Image (cartoon, rainbow, N blue to C red; front, side, top):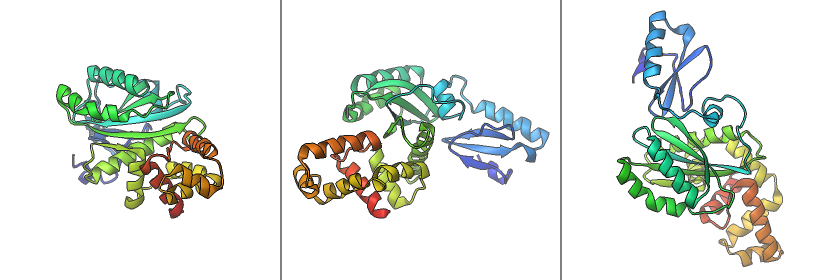
Length: 286
């Protein structure tokens, strides 16, 4: 869609603009935004027709969709933590697939609160992982079967666990995670499934602006010397808990308590190498 040549004032982003002064049209994984004041009556009619054509009639629109994608209303339900699993796909997902995947996620990871159709080629599943399980490997193992059964190729991004008392609204983290995933795919990366710490490590190299996400970890890591000292000790000890506790002059049980506390506050599990590497590099970068 080469509309930029005909409408030089058009803007592009990953979410629609809900403003009476603009009209938004979906273009693949992105949206094109046209200022109505610059359009002729004929152009406006044509764009409205195109907008209607590109908007799937069966799109699942819930209170969560309104809050996260449309930017309307307050958070529909308070959870202890919010985690999204993003699926990139070739065509709009059927209700059958959404039901199957919701059932699988509910069995191996956590309850699916809702699925949010971000675009025709991307869907996010909001999960309530109260048991704090880490069975994403099971989900990864069954992806080939799902692709074969539904005739689609998937790219998956497992988002961070955002606590309910985070500095910013959950919608802000959702948007930045979605933008991060899009930037990663645009960079022609080949991994089928990527985790949050993996993408954050990549973002440090690619210099992807993530203002809200960075503020979160600045609060959890940089402004908390106790936690930043623990990260450095863990990194210098290559993740060995006994050596890390010795460096910090604390008992191993005390170290485990701090690790659990950081997991709740930040979403990072420093026992995982990618999480530890990201936390350490984030501190060093600052």
